[in-house]
Image (tube, rainbow, N blue to C red):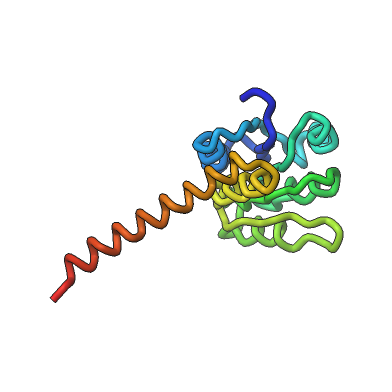
Length: 167
């Protein structure tokens, strides 16, 4: 997309099936984003360059997904003043995902990382849109419409259940 304002990064292309949910949500709202692979361990200089240049390039928030030791979100957060949303990913070398969750969640004071649920990239996309929407009325309006659609869907399901089990 042109002029991305959300950066979606992940430690490996094997994380893409999870991380694509963030991209899909941002696409629904027409929020411009970019997606790339940035490994904290295998390409540390690329990670440093990405994090330090992101704000200059117009990025407003970074979504960083990682599995296993999951250092990417925290390291990126240590290199930028932008908000970073961490997505813990259940990977092949993960211990039920808890290693990823705790690596992203338990950040030291001064280096905050907003953390969503295990494999919760869609929520990361929603949170990124909310951050952007705080200063962009068109994104905020689209988020409100999304919330209304969720409400309508629940009310429709409730009606079906009530009709099916009414005595």
